[in-house]
Image (cartoon, rainbow, N blue to C red):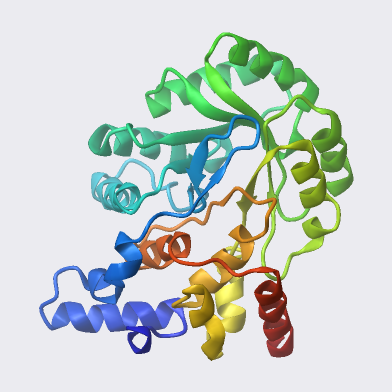
Length: 314
């Protein structure tokens, strides 16, 4: 099966299109390794409770911000349904993401919510507006309880923590978190990791952006926090930078088939990381992503080998 994969997402889609023209209705399925699809999903424990969650979730920045067009929404529902079928649970969003929460709610009505681990954010400098924003998110998702509520990019953290702690006490949410992105505000985030009454932290980490390894990830692990990783692909930048290069032969040692899995398995194999949340609107890309939560993960020595390889290509 490995020889069927191209080393870029564009190559994958070109081959999928060719198979579709040849009469294969679901071209993505032709690339799926049956053993990988049926093998157990890799999960990790949320430190504060021991609850197990899959290591690959779904982000919704841009990909779910598709307005009201039914055909676009239905196409995204297919992606979400396949995500659940392949063992996915965690969906992360924010009021910052345009129509994303509305589209999630639309899709959950079609796919069901039984497998969902819901994660969203409050994003406003004003506490009273935060209350309205939170109420709106509950309505858009169609939920009575969120699994994880986060303060987006540390905006008005102290004010929103009052709200979220009260909601947690009233069983309106299960976990509280705080987020940053693009590698910003690490000093402020470290202070919150060490002292704030939170269960989760979300931050940027990938094979190139590894600053979090020095302080943030060790601090989160020591404090017993769940760690959710955003921008594991730097959006598409890692593919643009590396996908025209061949993958090394030794990727089979950790059951890797493509660049998406190379990038994701590097991220989720860090012992402090709970899950990564790549975003996609395309089924072939989803199949690649979800393959990262099957088979073996790289160990410490292999992770070093992966970064050495990437640095040689830079």
